[in-house]
Length: 148
Image (cartoon, rainbow, N blue to C red; front, side):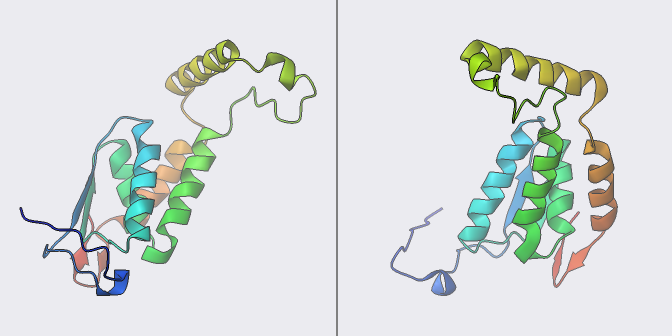
């Protein structure tokens, strides 16, 4: 492939040398949050995929993307990931003793506890939000593009 970036062109005048752009999102739990950042970078570069596909957490992100108009996709992804990652039962924000327990060891312990709680009991609101996004996006057509 002979793709040469042309930074001197404005985003509106830049055209990618592809007829179709596909975004494939893999599974892997925490990788899903990184996928949101990847899509945000693509959107900022005015690159909008024609096809979106995913498996596991990638399918959930794909459903959120397909189920929302391009101008609100980044916000919906951020909303979803904020919801499913910020409800740990030991959220000590506002606690006056929080500075006493801030250390790498404590953070590592809390991260492991959070991961184990999510594995054992699920993430609060995760399946409910994921199911709603999947239903909203099922078989959705956007212009000449199709999202599955």
